[in-house]
Image (cartoon, rainbow, N blue to C red; front, top):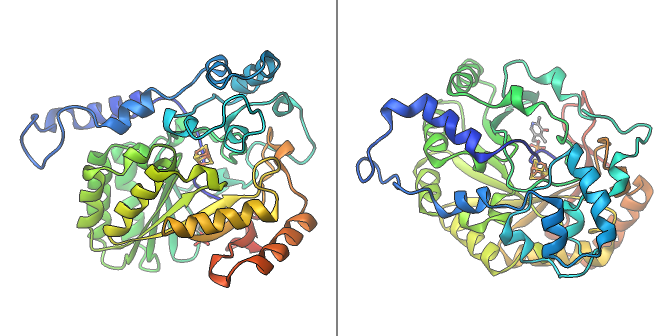
Length: 361
Ligand SMILES: *Cc1c(COP(=O)(O)O)cnc(C)c1O
Ligand code: SF4
């Protein structure tokens, strides 16, 4: 699982951008069609719910959920965009979307084997913002920010402040890519790479397209799901312009996440020539049943998205209550195989530090 996680505010990203590009910033109404007002998605990102009390109030939850929500929030900030909240059932503490974002008391309980950096990424980050673990593919941390903070995120303790990419770091990553002809695919990850501005992303993707041995651009993102307005004309402009083959790997765990706005966002991406895949995490209390997983695959295909990976939980501290044991995971997938055509079957995998690929279970 790679595209999941946190940190400060959009404002930080933007202030960094002004610091770096301030003097060259094009005047409103000139240049290549950059909007003088911030795009709608940025306002939605800035307006995401960041207060556990507000989250409980908006969903009409009983007061007894509040202490846990506040305790978990202190460990890893609550963040839920309105568009995602709108798909939750009010008054239902077991709602499968809410369970992904509501901190519980259990997060504060230490559990043996659950650690801060389960994938040992710190050891695989030679240049800041770049992770090269698998042959032919390099992962660039294109934005430290996420639009939603998922409680099970394996990067919930990731030192993003140190990995927030500056343009100079992107230049260094690009230099690494230029110098290694074995790399065929650049994967933008984060945080959520689409939390970066289109101005910065189009710059990066243009540079990537100039590297002759690169064939593919892959983007691991949850933004089109939690804020479908992210897939706007400015995004589609740079995405359509690149010569690289494009793959977007979404992150959806439950069919209820896919509403009409998400379907429309997927259609726009497809029309821009993007291959759409999905990765999920197998989560107790969210999707750990054959029925839920089958419904998810069906709904994904309705949206033009193929299931790719079903990850077992990475043992990150604070997420143990989501765990599904391996035997149960295998049984679920066996049951799923009886329900679905082969092309709607996700691959059940685990990420093991030091291995050269995801490991099938
Ligand atoms: C998951 C992952 C990839 C992509 O792996 P695929 O099997 O190609 O989807 C690449 N780099 C890192 C560091 C990853 O964790
Ligand atoms: S979207 Fe969720 S799972 Fe993905 S990096 Fe962000 S917090 Fe983690």
